[in-house]
Image (cartoon, rainbow, N blue to C red):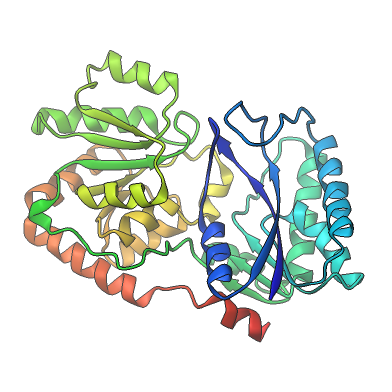
Length: 355
């Protein structure tokens, strides 16, 4: 089986950001698909990237990518069983590829959705129109949350929910007594993506109760965040692990006690998203303390996989409870085990065969 993948890849200081879409690609490979990949950058890369710097800006970059996709497919002159795209802009040329018999099926995986993606009214109109066009014409559309599914299920041709559940072979939860009683935070963006001021206030408050407690950060915090850490004298309590490979991330998660997720509400797509960091915490057996913005938080609350909180005091009280109350901590762990066993994505090959 041959498949063509067209996607945008976000790089952070030269490191590729990987997520739920990559799990789909890995599953296709495991199902004996041979993948050709066309990867477009989202931003200008630095010298660590294998790509050349691209200086085109919207809308010229959109037009360039559209014709580049067409050029590359015609140049390769291959017939595909499947073409998969991860955003509406890249889906558009795939529609024509199918019309001209370059493929048998189109699969659109919506990595996110935003009701207000662009400030520019023309770009926003085009985004919404292209999104609806994709879900109406793809042989299979997968979305990451029930919120997106409920919004578009009546106009989609064939839509399923496929959450950002990690594939971790032979994962074993670390014994509770062998876990460090520290808080873990994973994020590729900080100041504009997270409630950084509240997170630092939370750590400051926790340190007053537990002087040695640490916030372990996987990711690349910006300068502003690090400067605020210094101002609050929290340098000994906030540990930067930097960018880690996926395997290293899972190992680091399992060492700690609580997974923290506290998004900012500045990004409109958060409401419709499925938090990859929460999924990774749960996959490695960490109770979660999170905000109520994402659809994932609803599952944390309804299955008691941790706590959903609203402010610094609420986050603090729930974390203290998990640290002090071993019985309650064990209840969350047992719930996570049950939840993980029941909430697995269906094999993508089986889904495609029905589409």
